[in-house]
Length: 482
Image (cartoon, rainbow, N blue to C red; front, side, top):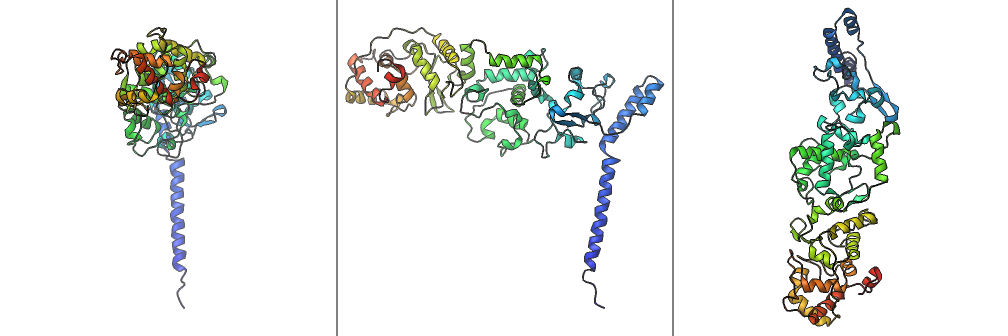
């Protein structure tokens, strides 16, 4: 009788089935009998028994049930089983124990009850997990892994105004917010609708997942917080070609700024979770105090212009950065022309517009910023501009004396772009003539009036420079003499 050709397949099926059953039994044993959480609860029960001071306490400790525990918070869409292992978080007797049995630090649970807040609203992580690696969730398909202890202050800002908390309560977060202001990050990044446009908006960066970050050059942990920290240390090393300057931060400052970035979350929490200081903060945002021009300048302008008293060459951008608070400049410019430059920026350069539709500054804030720029020198009554002369002669004078700094086509090299349409709209003939005549102290711009240029030559130059002016721009936009 011929051998059954399917016999070997039947035996293979039987063997695979037996192996599968063995693995299923092992998994069931691992999950229900030898799970880590069971051992941790047994250890906690022994600690309670040792600490018991009477027979009743010892009996209660020995009878502590070994079971899965969880906190369900429907308002936050959270199911957190962290308390399955962290049984001692609200027990003062556990203050001397190691994790996971230790009492929660800083007695925060006295005002953040676990049954109301859960755990993941502050710590993130995979709340339904029953072992540490899965709860940590760094290498799992989980959007928000467990935050390291040094970064957990980031979540305080969801319910609190960190600056209104008692001193030391959220020190890293407060320092990070201060560094954001001091380093002029708002000059390139928008936050709450205000800021520059060279970098990405930061409003919700704390809720981004790691898949939204370019991690090709990221070494070590592939978490958001490691990406942010490494990016602050070496922006171009993480994003090749990045124009972000190295902010020169110490290690604690890197951590603080990382905490602040992680705190930027547009999370819609129920009103009962918002502390009074958070509500006050939201009210203040909707009803801001009168703008402070100096603070606005530090926040949005100083990163590029520094004090603004001197012009400088920016090696990173390979561009001339004008001294916008230079006394000679603000004396010659009226408030309207300063406001136009700030409001509209300089197209074709890194200088963005800061008006309501661009950088998000209100007209009141623009006025405060102009007033601060003006504080370095009062406006002066400018001598009348000479009549525009011969543009052909002006072209020769420009090529001989001006093109080396301003560019042959007025495009700007180590001096401003005179062909820029915003400059042409904002600058009056009197302003341009006075600049040629008197120069700019603390900048490379010489006083050609003292170098032999008469009013006729200035008029010729003026005629040539105005060839770049859009038709009727000054008269229409500013309502002043062209």
